[in-house]
Length: 180
Length: 416
Image (tube, rainbow over all chains, first blue to last red; front, side, top):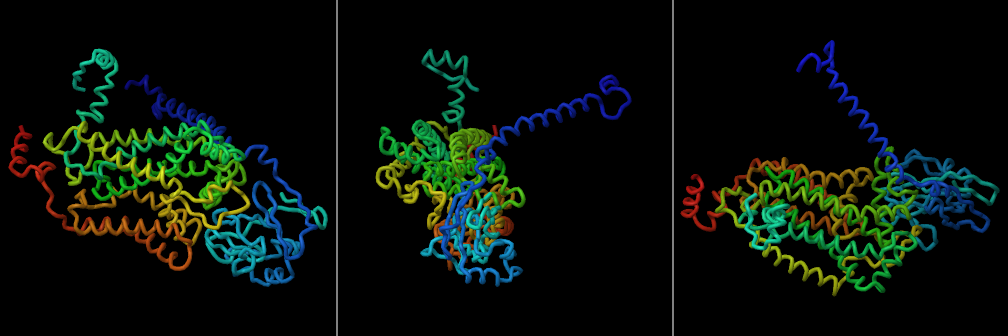
């Protein structure tokens, strides 16, 4: 190696600097080129556009549940009985696996709105129809791996790590709700 | 490469320009030396390769009739069964072929475990085998989703939901995999694309597997190195024909399923079109995933279950170093042999547990069997290797066959 190859003044030789700089630019460029490929797999614009659903609550009698589809997922809407509300509100939230008060989950106590997807591995819990098992806590029971949810959709027993998700929703009128 | 004596002038013309015939002859022909003592357990490697080729061939034909769309996939599969000429044969061959491909690969893996084929200097060979195994699992899973029946849909849901266990970014990753907020049409189409791609990635990994194999040649039932030409016979014709015998047996079993019990290993629920609002009462994976499914369910925590299931495969990458015994073949390991038998029983037991609903005694059995699986590799493998006194090992591969006298003569010859 001669002084000319090292450049002047020592320190980092010019050639090493050029190699590192070129390599860095190449890596950044490659990452930038890969991103469109990766991002193309994310939900497309038309999939994102199907983001809200309106539901008429009028026909749902007390003690009855219906299932509607929102973003391809089932959403459970239950018209809770006074008993179910009492049960949900009487439970001490602090003792639960995923502590949350029923008042936060159902501000309008009569109506419980939940994403009907088990938080374990995504099965649909049973309990929407009267003939179906509702689990040990009177809410829902997931047949796949045995998770029990209570009348507030909170996880009480089984492998699921979290409560059934409460989607964003707003009451448009007393009997009309928009999910999403 | 040595000159090849080709009689046909046309072949000689090609060979002079592209030495493909001598390449084949050196790879799987008369110029590739294989240990002379290989038993029938050594059939399953080439058999797995043939099974891969058969899956690709039938899969390409099926792809010509299949429609990858959530509204049409199920009907297009039924059309293959009813209208397409020999469509039923192609589909049943492909579905049952996948099952037997796994059977062959599991036997191949346990063969490697018993005879210590993962040990020095074959660690990378073992790794590429495991990589092929993982790629096979991904390919089989995505292929199972394509008919878009109830089991397809819910298998896709449960398996992709494993990724939601990852803290913080899990849901984002899962929605990226789905291309939506649930398993849906975008998921089906990308699984179809990947199900077509991955078999060719497997072919690439198979080439690396074979490259590493040819570097140090096959291990053998005695687990000792090839010391000279007296220990080997040419791959062709000896092992090519032996492999063909095994292929014959394999095809008898495969066609037995295809013609007489084509749905034996399937689930009736998969003949119900996918319904995103109704989970079937019992979700059970295909038999070849059952041990891993049992391990997943043995851990009473979502993230924990996923981590332990992944670890059950990752631990296999470490066994070239976890096994401290210098003796390759378990034939000469009187203590480890028992542990090997227990491991086989344990994995079969895990498979049984995976098929049962997670209730009562099965939960306990599943947990104990999972614990034993890890104890085997992490505790017993290193400790037995340290304390065990192996049986005397023959000096060479040909000695037990031809006797010590010939062995000594041949060894002398070798020195010159």
